[in-house]
Image (tube, rainbow, N blue to C red; front, side):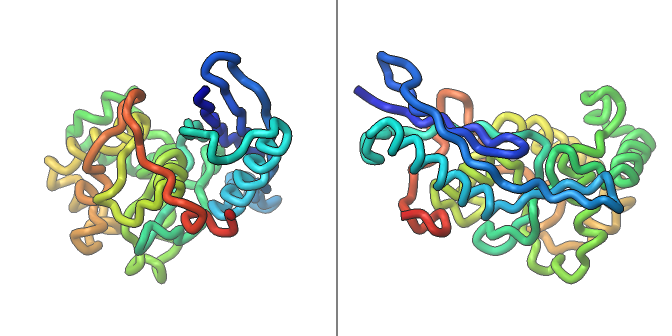
Length: 247
């Protein structure tokens, strides 16, 4: 009978559970990865994409060994990750830095600026989130990253939510055009961008972003081309080369 691997990326570890179509869960294993914090900056919280992928490999191998199931018997992978964890990527969707994890609060000033300028410009989207743009959300974190990494701006292509980055990596997606965006990304990014992009005055008041080339501007690559509903397949596992070190 079909087996599905349920993968849950948390703040400190990833858990993989094998689920039988008739018996239900038949085994679980987990693997840890570090959360990078700084004593001198309590708002700092990052995580490495590569360390997460290595942990996924370890947890998957452990649960297969525990249950005696062969990898070829697993017909699908279902992903769940932390939200508001954002990573900037460059060519081939390779990470340019670590994730700004959900608990990274360095972008407080950027969030206040976005909130102030959205209200000043009469941006309807700001009302959709209670009138305040959170420092945990994608635009604030990306703006903070752009301001503090000027040498990497020329390499920047887009920014991805945690769930979209993992799905793209495992299915071998290497371009923005190949992405299928999750519901959280749609709600937090695409719909906000669509409303933002219609307001040219707001783009002008954020010179840190509006100077970038067309591929990397708000309302372009950040407006993902398609959406994945819960019943849709996000991608097909591309094989061992899509995750560094997997065999």
